[in-house]
Length: 182
Image 1: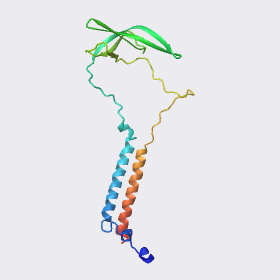
Image 2: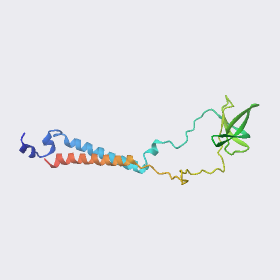
Image 3: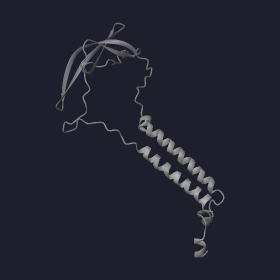
């Protein structure tokens, strides 16, 4: 093959012989996948973030067989460990004449609290009440400044957009080469 033959080829398919008959089908397939990828990129952009679909923010409620009950707060105690003070409160739960006690972190509850207990082992119970009057404190850094939550960048959208454009360009190049350069 001499230099003149290489330069006189009409299109890339004639030059290489690859996909000479079916280059148009390959081009159409690439264009179709490019359009599909761009549509999916639009869906991901509309969702705001791909990660929102992957995370479960709703509580999953499973029937664990526990029953609702009431417990009474009892005595309180404080323990100092490593310069920090930990406060605890004793919850007293009565079931069928038996009394069960459980030390739990002091959440500022007084009087009766709602609990759920295991009917097979009534001493196994936990608090279901929410603490009222306690405001959520925003997170702060070492300097005492409030940390703002930043929304993660939507890298999936950009990757899908670029990949869709590349597929569309390749498919268009194959179709242009097959139909217009013959």
